[in-house]
Length: 164
Ligand SMILES: Cc1cc2nc3c(=O)[nH]c(=O)nc-3n(C[C@H](O)[C@H](O)[C@H](O)COP(=O)(O)O)c2cc1C
Image (cartoon, rainbow, N blue to C red; front, side, top):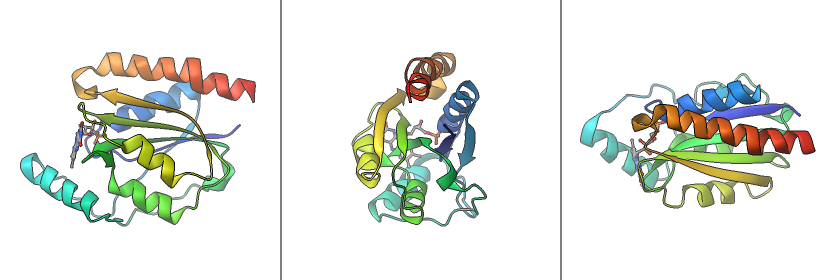
């Protein structure tokens, strides 16, 4: 089964775990990059990000060279923004009408994951959502988070592949 890890990351936490998952699963990886994204900091970051979520923005993505149709299993990761998935994922879900895939979802957050995973699930309702996972305070617990991700790959994602 062909596997692809798809993720957006603003500050690196989701990226780190996406890379860990892809390496341990022997999957390909696709970073969703926002065209001309400005790396805002501090209060402005939350103001801008929160507004973008509230407005249901669909920021333009940099071109994607990968053909999503070729993959049977997608592992999709996002940071939590204002209790839901980041706006770049909204663009991705709307642009690629993803159907009939086996999907694993994960998010990274700082203690308030809100409805992130439920909201992603409802955007992907034509698929088989196999499992979901959230990771809390990744940047404060890097090794622990990587180990949890590795365990998830070994005990859940790889097992699913073998059993198919
Ligand atoms: C705009 C914005 C909104 C956020 N909203 C939340 C939130 O609602 N709940 C939470 O626990 N963390 C929130 N965070 C923290 C991030 O989810 C967390 O640091 C995440 O791991 C960042 O992932 P990244 O490094 O891949 O961008 C927010 C961060 C940003 C930038």
